[in-house]
Length: 333
Image 1 (cartoon, one colour):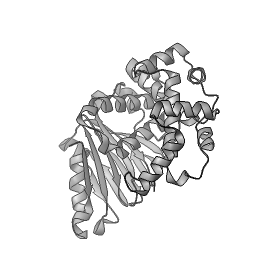
Image 2 (image 1 turned 90 degrees about the vertical axis):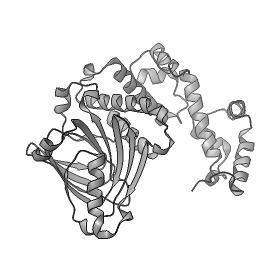
Image 3 (image 1 turned 120 degrees about the vertical axis):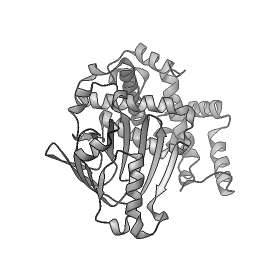
Image 4 (image 1 turned 45 degrees about the vertical axis):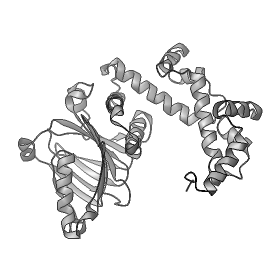
């Protein structure tokens, strides 16, 4: 089983904090825990087991966390732990240095180094997403990573934003993955993490060629998603924005069996298809939807849509509305 779901609501209020402590000792490095809400500690966790890499989303109200030298002597899994603050704020202390963390920050910890944390969050949403991996698996020199321990890295933009979005997607899509996906998910996760850290240090020469390629592809993916509505986006503009040749871009996408132009077209068509199936947008003109996704010629779009999905866009919209009305498919909230 790749995914595990856990909630302290399964026991009575006085037992919840002890249950949380026990559960997190099994899923994460062992820490000393305290909470202002320990008399009724309502928390939940969703874990994704990728064998060497462990990812988890957590929601809780307040936690004080300490990784002490005594705990390290008793048990040290020798892992890095990366925390993405999806909500809330906190203070992290390492080597007598306090660091303030807030929503959108990424931070790296080492199970072999003592630290303390004090986090206040909203138990009604995922407080943060964590990832743990053996130090030896990360394709970066240990001395490079040590420079970044407890240093806030923005997960709001750039490579930090790409990696934060990846962690959030791992959590949101956890139930969709199968054991056959584990190897790929592990590789991509580690390469994106290494690229994020190296970019933050402007030390990309420390990356393996595979990690650099994964990072470049992730940046290209983000760029394309952000510019799909721009009719002027072409394979050449994508290549120029990432300081690579058009030939290099073509080679990257050829690994996935596609071309830059075909990939852009597919992403735009999928955006249109989802909007046409959305009952909340049924009064929006089809031409307005196509323009939103970068199509400027309605007739050309109609031909492409029919060739791809086997049905004209207007018929697809009507068919989707009818299926939704009859509850033959899920309807948008």
